[in-house]
Image 1 (tube, rainbow, N blue to C red):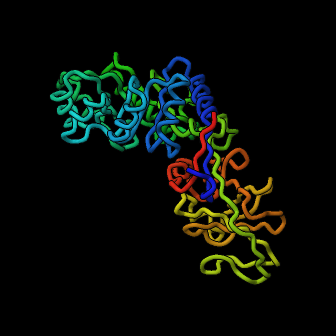
Image 2: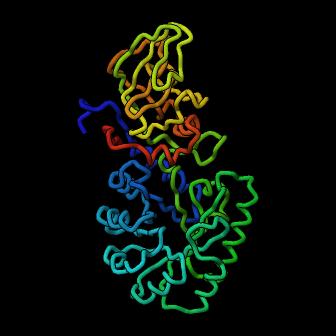
Image 3: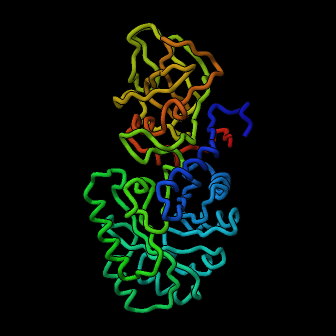
Length: 358
């Protein structure tokens, strides 16, 4: 997209993406490191991210929807592609046509795949305590006893609190997964998401599923981020205006100048994925970086615009302000909006100029 006609831009560092993959792989040296690339590679673009991860050595990919799998298959013809949603009713032929591996989540799906799958690979997703789409332990045991002609290549489960290393529920879930694995001892196992790479080798098993950490999110909240920043989000200054003391800016007059102020209006808003919770009325301290200085967001975030206080810092029309990137971390920006890095990334809109660097 031509930046000349754009007021917001996203820069994606594919070199940092590849480096993050290698960092996570080094954390689990006895396992294969896979990549969660669902939701358009967490909002960053499926094709460039998939190709970068393939170049870094990734061979197993996880998507949520079968349509995402079809799109990925066109990009990576030789990849192993797992569909986390399982097998959609009556759509086995679609999975077969695009060589997608369903992570089966019910006895009904297992029976349908055994009848239609013709011996092609599938995974089984068993619950270990998070109570989302998955087989219960009892259902898994019944499935094993039924001896369906399934080519099960992976047994998987999902952690609920892996970013909290002291949370005892991690150990509870590990025990439940080990119990389930005893029913299929010769099948490869997958349990670890991003943060679980740092919980120890007992959590990584045979294949990991790296997610937000690949894209720069911190897998160790409260500690220095071992990952490189991948995404920089910036917005252009549309105008700098004087706001006299006592006057307001933005909808509902939620912010009034306590002194004669200068306010810069940036050309992005909630249509572009800037959360309204970054509005100063909600009591947060959301900031942008402009000319090397942090400037507070003031007033309400609107559909197309954000106001920032530049009274103490020079700013001019046409300059760029960083919402997150190398200076304001993705996780800090998310916290200032009362949300998580996953949501910020996946809500990036389609009005940005996107630049890929390596």
